Amino acid sequence: MLAAAGPAFARMADPRPAGEYAAASARANDIGKHLGESLASANAYERLFALQYIDRKLDAVTADIAPLLAALIADRTKVLSLQCKACINSCSLCDACWGLYGNSDCGRLRELRVSAVGPLTALAKGPLRAPLADALWVIALRSDADAAAVAPLMTSYGDALRARVRTAVDGPDAAAALRLLENFSPGQCGDATLGATLSRRVADGVPAVRARAALAILVCGEGSDAWKEPARVAVTELGAALTDPHREILEEMPAVVPIVAPLAQAIGLRMADSAAADGKHGVRLLRAVPPAAADALAGLRARLKVSDLDESLELFQLIEPLGRRAASLKSAVIGCARRTGAGYWAIITLGAIRARLSDEERAILRRALRSECRFPGIESCASFSNVMAEAYGRPAIDQRTRTSGYGRRSK
Image (cartoon, rainbow, N blue to C red):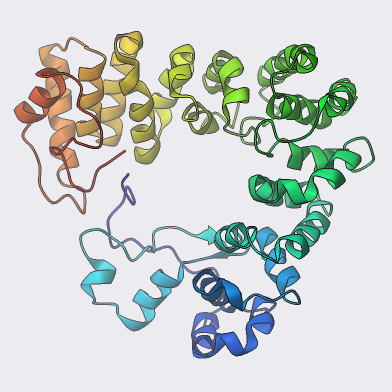
């Protein structure tokens, strides 16, 4: 995937106060001596340095600082990466910072909490699992946004929190508990007794609780007869929710087979609904069950018309394996290539779906390919005739063995 659609030299402005990174950097060399203090620092870059240190030295985390680490999963402070800041402050002319690949990493801001996911996931396998789970539970109950931040960690901490989550599902903290439960590993939530509780919550008067209970049913069901009727009701409830463009539901849906497989068509229709603001999340979901994309062609077509460069490559990745079943997307693929300049993978995708091209369409793709060759970081360009031969002249090539095209471009 391209690192960025813009020039390699593009920089985002640092939203943090001037001098904050320099102050944090000065304390970073001995950060292990004041790790807890740094995790709780008012200086966002010092917190980021602390997370980097922990990521490299997991055994530095002790039970007393585990809650400080857990708290950062909900830290939404926007920062530039440490790689970017080091390039700007220490090595502004280094090839490693400003070379063809644009790997200064200065093209986007990240919420600090993203850097907490790796260490917290790794530590879930060790002796700090219990105190971290305790801290994460407290955080999840603070607000819906904090529950959403903690939820992706449930595949790692679900076992440690299962009893508390199951109890809370039927109480005043149901919305937060269900937000966590829907992110458990499929089939690992509990027995059919939980299914009965969730079925009651699907009839709740609060839309968010109904939808989350339905999602949890599909995730938790382990295939027994006791879950079949709850699952049928859940699919109906979620199908109805997906038709309401004012409810941003796609972003919350976990990308797992039990959810995506029965709802692929509804997800596609949601992606195609111009009134829905969350259509871009449909690609993430369909990637969990690539064959299901055949039931979501309307959504793929709609996203091809508005996608940026990165999303367009993800769409091509979904479309290519569908072969002739995606033939109706030909015009949308060509239009996307003309708009984004993603010429190479558009041609490969068109070859996979065996699309016949007119002279005018070939000219559009040739121009897109020529434009793509001017992107920063492209080391070499195959000719239009060679790319066409690759796409149309031989059977489909496994992604891992394909060698032509552009070294920096992969899906």
